[in-house]
Image: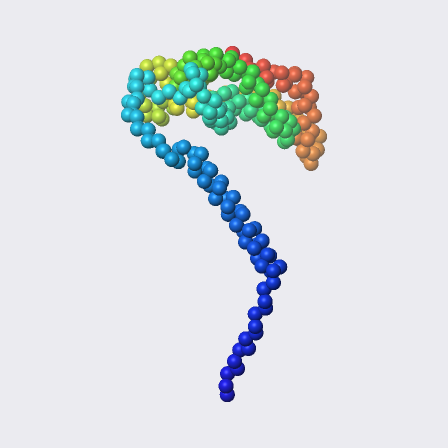
Length: 287
């Protein structure tokens, strides 16, 4: 078998119209290239920096830091502390505020006394915990107001003005709080914590460290709260015993004495203005 030979067709003759169309296409492609070439030449001739580059600047010698012995200072922009540092300190204080509220203020004692009062009345959830916590919080602000005011005057405001550093503000701000803790800490608890800490006996109370003073203060507050709670429980306990004896004498053994005694407890508490007496006793214990 023989391979099929390709059939060669004669080329079509080129007319004048086809030649002119081909020329127009070439012009259309050459015009953008010509424009780009002219623009590039113009930028090269108009930019003197490309023709004559400048020499680089020589590096300067480092300057030794000045040490005046005052330590590291976080104050920038003048004598006042920077906003970033102040914001960081504020966030730190807010993060430890719940622990500080429980350990270095009168909040724990007041909340325990109010809870014991509710239990003495025989009320399981009235007033609710939120109400008792709010009352204890505002009483704490009332009692700790002078201490907070002194800390603000001697530490916070001078630090914000830039007259003292952060470490100096901590030292002077610790003094009013330490005085409050020492005034409301019993000697027995303070001696106990000093012995447990294993440190040397301080020369005076002002030399006691905060790590030893704070737990001693908390133990003293709990002891005082339980003593006040015991005094509150005694009248209501006597009333419960009287109601139980009366029910037993009448043969009403199936009636719970707590249900019968609850109205009498509330009547007694309202007649003696119990909330005012408890509030006065709590606030007066810190005067």
